[in-house]
Image 1 (tube, helix red, strand yellow):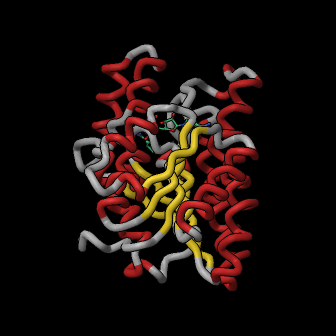
Image 2 (cartoon, rainbow, N blue to C red; image 1 turned 60 degrees about the vertical axis):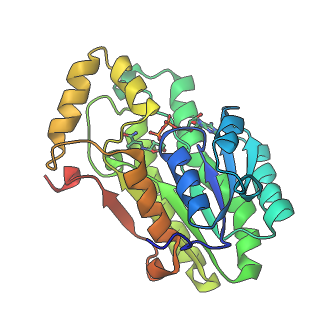
Length: 256
Ligand code: NAD
């Protein structure tokens, strides 16, 4: 990978304070991009501080909840005010709540759907009007193996990630003629705080993690950087023929 593969591209990354999102921000900045990093977690400030000298002016932080309209308004405005355009919108923030569907409270169902799915609608409402006059743009939406496989305890999470796939296809069709492309990246299990929380919530953390490792034919789970590298490739000019694609990066999980 050329270190300047994303030179001067402007990306908005949600869920940027932890796990896959934090790795995306680090690799994007290293590849020459300028990034608006979005999260509810004020750790965004420490993410900005962890960047190397000379990289700080390449990241703008927006603290907000992606299920809320005002957050989409704020991150889009930040991208324009700081960097003048939006080339890549990465809808990565997501939450899991491990239980079978009938055990979810209505509040849990709504929360998972609003954070994982409605957030993409809000991003479209604010970012598409910026990309249309540019004549170009890319959305990357983080799905999951749960987008395409049924798995125990994914009551609201699985349907929410299934919706991410169909939103991706729908947007790809509606906006292709404007030069706007839309893809879904569906990781297998990745070693992040979200995974560790899901393991604890399952009531049998060790068994939960062992089962997931064994479910990946490749024999292990992924590191966040392995997923982030794929986001770099997809955001580069080398991946310009991808749109409407549902891209499994899952160590063979969905093949078995
Ligand atoms: P993580 O918990 O490490 O990071 C998610 C980040 O999103 C956190 O910093 C959190 O504060 C932020 N966030 C949560 N709700 C938010 C909201 N309403 N508004 C703004 N920010 C919010 O999780 P991760 O594992 O890095 O997950 C990132 C994405 O990858 C999620 O969409 C997740 O569903 C997906 N995913 C994860 C795995 C895995 O095994 N870890 C597998 C497949 C897909």
